[in-house]
Image (cartoon, rainbow, N blue to C red; front, side, top):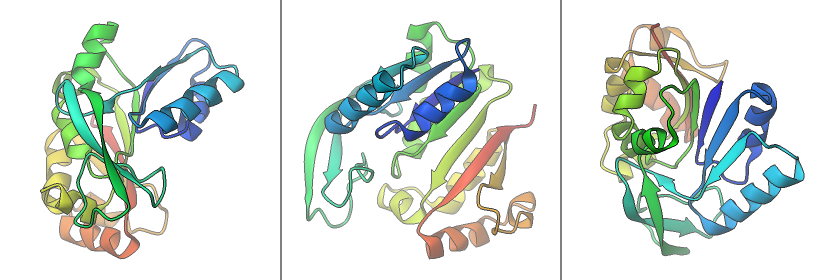
Length: 209
């Protein structure tokens, strides 16, 4: 299996995925923030995984340079989306790439699993993976869904859920206590309210096929 860890942070899920896919599989871990990236690489090396490739780039809708807002409130809160309050943040320029461009350059025609946690920039990443979506018949995406951050980036959360389903993805909650019938019946407004109360929830998005 091929796994993309988009927003790999320091590698917690990268290492889990590397163990699960085994030596015949491969994990591509994307992390843009320099200090996090350094820890990611160190964690992969310390654990002896040779089936991981670390990429020091942000994932967006196209290649180029973008501004990353680095938060002092936690090294897991850096984002391409500018918050309403910039107190305690600093701006750094980072290279970016789309998943379509990366997959093409790496000779990959299929990906099995994408874990995506990029603090509200998920719509950007989704916009840059149309070809990969079309080619990957068994694709599953595990994605953080944080309505407030999406709104900060100019995305309506309910419309984003609608967009996911329009791409042929079946949505379900990772958290067990969220009613699954909300997702079976596409009750997007209620899903957004659940997520707003919690701050964020996690979605499993799987292709029909």
